[in-house]
Length: 289
Length: 326
Image (cartoon, rainbow over all chains, first blue to last red; front, side, top):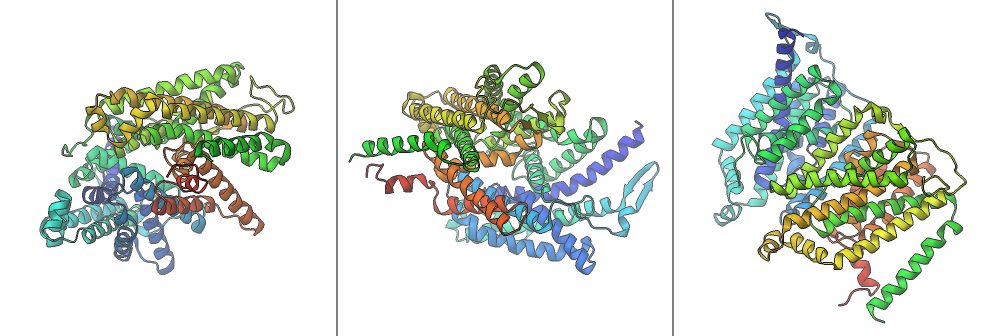
């Protein structure tokens, strides 16, 4: 095992990790504001991946461009989901909200199974085979583009929450629910917007992920768990934490695949989750509540 | 008629019907009934933790799987029957539950974080068992099927009728145990913790100790259902038995039936299993074999129940039957 090989694997893991980070960012934003854990997050990710597959198959649309329509559709879907299903559950006990989203997730993953069957689907674009060589290190073009898109989307999201008025209002809701209501913010609408924004993040992440892996319906629950691991490691509700968590998990998965056995790679992630939950439950970059 | 008397009569009738069932029904109905009892029993075990003590476990497949593998491994490698294996299974699950409970409660992890921790442990174990070649790894562990005619209770080998009665006895035992627990000191402490943990603590209840007790009892009960599973189905795969969808299957019954009630898990298991089997049969009749239909149906049931019947269906039915005081 040469240092070159390890460097290659680490860089590939880091780039994939940024896409993971964007997916987890959606979960983190939703939890940070609405205080509901989106148990259907990975299932939404696979739906976005299938959407990219369909758009590619029907119109030959490159997943890099499919991002736009899929993200818009997901924003609307997230908005509707929050307004119709989740808003009435805001005051319900935690386990009740959890069950609601478990039900949504169960329906999504099996509806995909009914429609597409258990076989893997993928997208073939010509740049998937190209790579850049920097000395002994090879970087896949597709992976680099996916990671770049993930970083750009995260930056846009960050700017939205820092600079725009709506973003500031959403952060006010997250800081103080009652206070936000007192100053006249429409909290339920802002919650719906937040769920829409979180869903759009997943949509972008899904379109990018289809450039890197094949999609099957059963990936949904696996991605949900992966997103949980990432946000808890990084800190639920912390935006930089989600990206950091994504990169950490991406690199550790890649290294575990190289050093141990590939099939044991997620065992490594779960061990990391257990350790973080026990010793730093607020996550690496999270604030203590 | 007083509600108690009415309840006693209905319970006797139900008991008599359940005992007589194997002599009246065919083998298909018997297998469905056994499955219902299996989910009723396992749901009852889960209910101790969530329904009584308010600790949401989404990783109960861990205990089913550990129990199943403990007893099946002992039988497969050393020929030691489940009469001994069940104790090993219980010991393994109690140890696992105690570790998870200790870590979680000591470090103040509760609510959603606790649920995620239970998932993490179950998933960790699932992938771990995929790599234990001694127990078959991902290829599965198979127990030899033999002596189908004799009733060998100690080795849990016998006819479907025997398995039905074993499961009926277990379910009845679990029901009695839970009825007793709910009225015991522990039961009242658990309910206090479930409703308001801080208030319970302020009253001087050692919440750590009683939550631990709930986890340990629930794990031990679930271990037994794992042992039954192993010897009833004779095959075990980590991908199936430890999978999170198994955990969800376990908890659907009590939630749909009625969280924290004694009859909820039984009623929920019956409703879900019958409806799901009905759907599968209907699909087969229509000549459609689409995977996932059953789970979509599960999801819709769960959705409807959590939205419109947050306390489950049993409380409504109990009122109709005149079993609760107004």
